Image 1 (cartoon, one colour):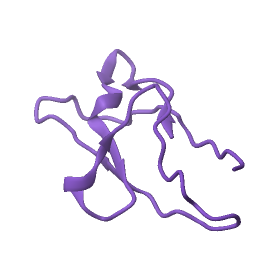
Image 2 (image 1 turned 90 degrees about the horizontal axis):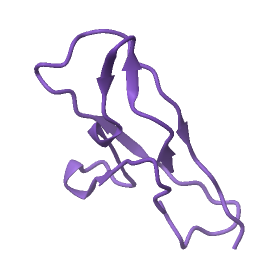
Image 3 (image 1 turned 135 degrees about the vertical axis):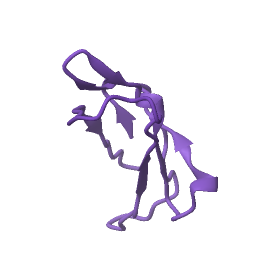
Length: 78
């Protein structure tokens, strides 16, 4: 999984590093998203699925608005 760019709303930017993910519903086990691919599960069985939890940390001084970006999830055959 990777983020393709920062989240943007006009000239307002929320850095991609404010987004994190985990395979468990525990913020303590999160991995910070970046523009480089991060491995989610290298031992996933064929035809299995993987649940992902995503968090977005919004600084208190961030301008309110609708921010947009894209994320890429890529699967690779074993």
